[in-house]
Image 1 (cartoon, helix red, strand yellow):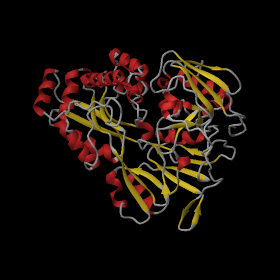
Image 2 (image 1 turned 135 degrees about the vertical axis):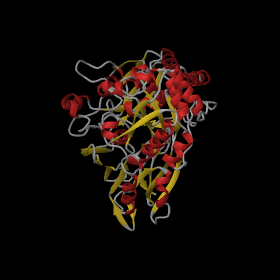
Image 3 (image 1 turned 60 degrees about the horizontal axis):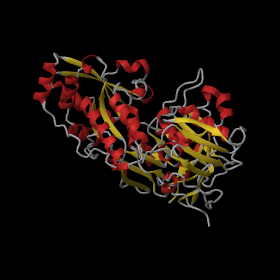
Image 4 (image 1 turned 90 degrees about the vertical axis):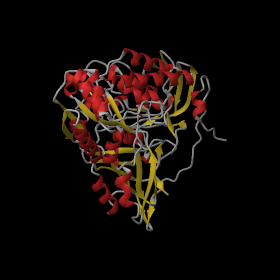
Length: 521
């Protein structure tokens, strides 16, 4: 009998992990629609591509492609956070800080780059988690491999991962996620900066074309040796940022699958052949303030702005009120959610008093947002509300390509107010890592530098006692609240809109899609 690998077994220190049982899959399982075969799946992405490179990916668009281009030692099962073996024949946690692995032989990289070996695993993990070699760029995801000492190659297919301290989330959000993707060392070294545009993996699909603004074409990898080959011969990922254009594309049959805000999906609920289902979300959306920029360096100014807006009005404008309000960084589904977080209500008199105490009159600030309807609508409401406390807002709506760089490097020093949206995973440290001091100049756009927060983050990342870890996570959220640099807005809600014959697959959270497991429903 084949052995099933459970998440509980994975996390148990010292528990041996056997060979994953091979499931039967058809050689080519083509979706059916109206009696005709459909070898092509077309999905919509709301954001542009950046790089399909585990070390330098930007967001879910890159991550969803990575998930089928590369293999990992382990992977989540379809529509589940439970883990199973992928490129590994065996994974053993031999101590709280050591993990041994053995690869399955014969797994081949595309484009003639040869067989996957333990040396490729070592290279893949260390290029993210260790200081970069001379001339190389540091990975934005270095924190995923926090405490990594290194990967020891013990044989062609065998190796050992060594950590300086235990990691509470090492399997779920590292080894089995984006930073656990295994690249070809030879291909990265040969292709250099082009690797993220011409990726080489051993997964179910390979990239045959990529245009950052338009999308990507993924074709089945004929040399894939894993147990979950793709159900379609080709997957086209089309970048369509506008919800109305997405609506038209779905009606016209130009795309088979999309995620929309519930309000944007409403007109499609009665369209024949299209299925719309509402799903909870673990994304988190907020309005942030650059704590180093001019008047915003004054706590009283930030407190005034927080009291000058009305979150409920903003959500009504941005999402037709069809999303829940979020009062802290962690959505309710994630361990350590601060259920008793303050619910700030608008108080014009107090906001004006705070500005007066700070010596600020006729304050003018720029609010940078992504040029999508929900953010534009919320920004207009915020602008009108803040005008009543004496703050003039200039709304700067930018396309994705420039917006996602506006808070980074030296440009980030000039950011004032901003609205942002990050996708979460079911782990508090994954959500909170972007607010550490090490992320200033990268994803910490508020430029918050708190030794207290960073110490709690580091301790909680290694804490394996759930109660102790939960308290640390709560304390981190309380520390964020004291800064008044964050006006939490919503953890959103998602509407899955797709052709009725299609059955999507996702890691719970509805942002991390498993394209290779999409099938005819």
